[in-house]
Image 1 (cartoon, one colour):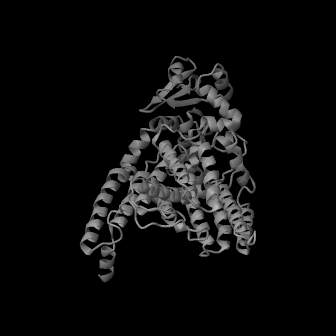
Image 2: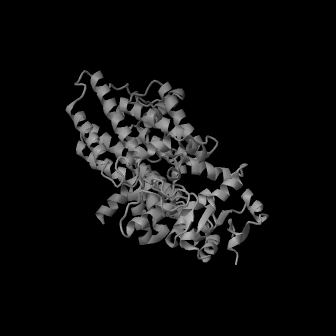
Image 3: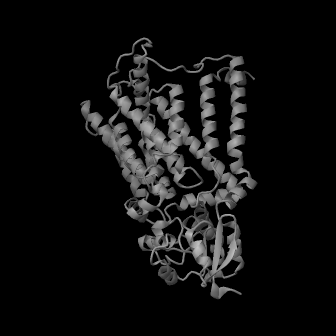
Length: 525
């Protein structure tokens, strides 16, 4: 009882605000399982689960037979399928929303450690999390948020002597087997080493202190250990092909640059503006590695919106310092001066590297009382429960999930295709976003799709041919005849639907609320 009273007594308004923030992040991140790639990730996990086998050529399509397939997310796929078998899609939604929330917690901690005021930290955390919201969903990519957050925290702890170097090696190996974006972790660590070497040289110390050499060896060992995976060095080389493909960059939305006409893009703009404004005050002093992190990850974020969450986390120390500098500058403008704080020296603690004279109100600060603590706790429970019930619960409730899936994917038309009983002779020309769902449903009976979200497996030629057919280019009929599908499945509003309805070579098989399926006329019974 005494411990409970102590917890309640110390539950001040600052903790209430943080609690509401993290509850809001979880509620918003609990999005319905509607990512098109979710289904082929589950199919991969199913493929690996019995018996364990690692395919090296494509199995799911009739257009990329024999093409090299690097399942670089194999461990993530296996984990996702394991969660699916344990608790279905609801458990997947909850787990990945929790991962996004964990990223939000780390972002808040990084901003606070940079010296940013608690209230401002809450605001910038929400901005940063929403800026990266285009990457939300039950997908391995979200794990990169968690690992980037852990890496930045770990390197900060290593800088202050609270962590040894050896942790980095198994950390990179695990990340490499979960997602090929572990190379971002290699970049962050390498920039940390380079920045620390520069700072060491500036202070007149040894250019490469023993502690940095230890971390460098751990980094090299981690890169070497990452080769221990089902696909060897191809796991390291895989992302380079995707990042350098103009075809993918120009046609896959998540690989495109951020859209600054949307809320996430505008929030990213706001964060960049805060950094610029903070630097303009002349009050910001940061370690070289923090500058390098921000610049390198900003380049990646501006190149591809899927990298925005990683930029926000890597740049958090600099964003926090710049945000606090802006607060101090605004305080000077309004002549609201607390006792003046002098600009700290280069060797001072990282929390003190921004000079400021004014802070925003802290909504009760860190002082509380039993009555106020009970009130704050009650507010958190009531408002938090309301947010979860209103926003998160519909995404995990099976009936709502089923309705959302049926409104997005070709559920009933796929049922009709399965009833054809074509087995391994089934070849479906499909809309790109339907590919993952179709192979999840059809592969067990031998059906094959034209394309799905694994664009790198299909290669540029198949992808170009898909685009030509999908956009009704001049040669689309010739290409369709060459690939010879016996079923076509498209969205209801697709331009080809009306064309196929008038084409004697195709017979309408089924239609549901989102899609239409056609079968070749010579299959009609």
